[in-house]
Image (cartoon, rainbow, N blue to C red; front, top):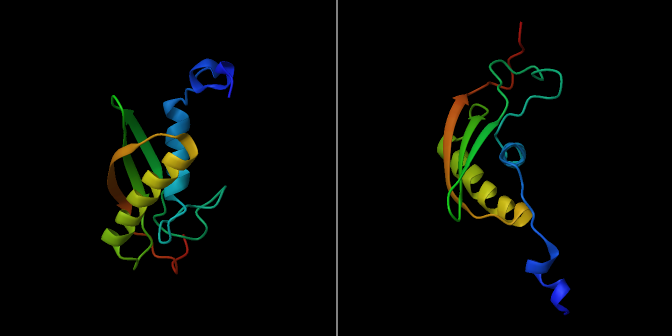
Length: 117
């Protein structure tokens, strides 16, 4: 490896917080039981909310606050824990950042069998 190939010589990569927030929300939406409304509508689910994320960088870690709609009757605590684990793992894989804390706020418990009026 030549000196120009070393990471410090190639430059820097900075990912904007707004991009990280979208990435984190998409990752959380991959977890079974988390409701992510279809584009252009609520996919027939009453009370569906989109997954939201806020990030805050500390010295060496990322702190995340998630707002999730968990589909009823999915176990809430287990689903929130799965979202925490998934976010930590996938953010490290995709963005190279360490997630230190993930706070989860359950914003809705939509029932999949109910159609919006």
